[in-house]
Length: 294
Image 1: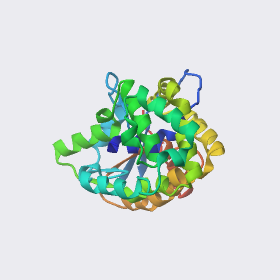
Image 2 (image 1 turned 180 degrees about the vertical axis):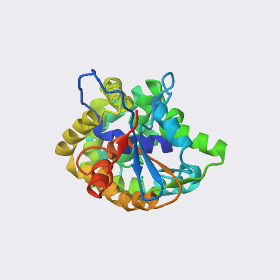
Image 3 (image 1 turned 90 degrees about the vertical axis):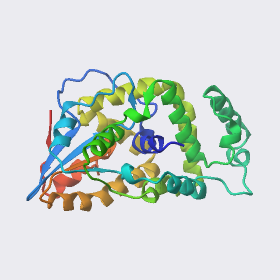
């Protein structure tokens, strides 16, 4: 499983099966400036996959990047060790030696998975040893890749390449275990629900992502919050560890950045910014006034 797919899934696995009107009237961007005592934190919402033919970032990303001294992402992708990630997945993303995927899923769900995997060119021999949440990630990645979404054109990857070319330092808000552990620690019933949701929504992936991308490009927090609130009501056990808890963990770090003399660009999945418990709300509660850029 590619690292970009993991990050995308954490940000957008909550969005499947939703449809909203596509008329947007705002001309804002998914980037906010938060002024501290000395420096500024630019808080930017990321989409971890973008269409290869429509990957240009809104101009506010460029302005924020040029005005910052360091790029901070959920994970420091510039220092991510592929071997470390592979080892973590081997230890935490696979079934036990005495457990089979067929037994975990049951025959009807296993048959349904096999049909979907075949349509996406994924051999079941590669999936049979993996935990249900990992399979959900992989199927989503394969479907979006098939639709023309390029992991290398995601917001994080674009900004990382630019920072590396400019010699600009990078940092992360959390470790691999903190980012992916929330999925691993989900009860098996919730992991199966993730897989079922993925299987049910594969055919709607294109329409759903177009809704998300339109809201994201226009910085439409109301639309994104609506998407998020519906999923919170339907799947709170997933929302808390993947969104709320991580936001609470990130907030003190962002507040430390606000005390620095240098400006910081913090890039996180767009759904971490909006709604109840979103970073924008948490910062306002802490006395800051995020200003949305256009």
